[in-house]
Image (cartoon, rainbow, N blue to C red; front, side, top):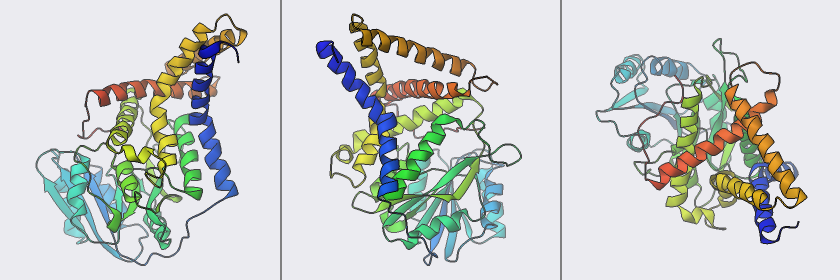
Length: 385
């Protein structure tokens, strides 16, 4: 390699980055292909309820409830519980109007704004159904989404199952506009993790969990869709992913809002890593390797990139050091151009890749600063208009 300790430091940082962003995805894809353990799906025979925690979702919640209740639902439905968390815009009244037409709908109103985790804790106590389906107020469900989701619980190994979020345009047609490389990359990893083991989290827009394994959340939890699945799997079981259980959303059109969402998500991972250090140890959690490789190691990537940059400066006397510095310069230039031209027609769509990567690193640094300062804000943050 050359360059002494500086060369070794740089090489190890590059190897770690390669594992995080290329090696681990390749590993899960290969393992899912060579040693598949798919979920054994079949007709659902238990009881189930839907939980929706909402704040200021008037105009969205009513149509969501109507859409849900009109779907192709399996037998065994107990109730739909809607929690209005200090809403100020008529959200609770809109839910109550649906409840007046359909006795399966129940509304819990909380006057003060506390956050989604606290609201979910209240809703968890309102039902003893075998399986809880959690969904948000905004996104529209495919007619058979819940039926497909619950079919996975025919397999006793499954404790949590995540649906698939699909972005659509104004006409409701699936689209890749606004989806970006990062989300396609994430779905690739989740699909293959579920093919042989567990996904270390779920899609917050739609997932289901066995009631017996649903643990109360800390009130300031930022990521219920990661915390609930990981706690449910702590003593065994699996978290699956079903591409047939589709929930539709519109892509975010405001880059600043999308960046804020990523920052909050990353801060939520840091929050859970700090609170559950055991999950990072071999044997400390059934999904420890996926949690470490898929989620936690990404928190280190800005520092690894900084090491690579510093290392390449220290290796300018070597050919590979100069080449590495030039490669970084080109990559950061491409990322900057990609971010500057986001949302426009451009001749090089591959610029989405470095742009998404750089945006992720910036969000990670800001999220870690939030975590270091204890700025965990459990209050609602909308990621789409």
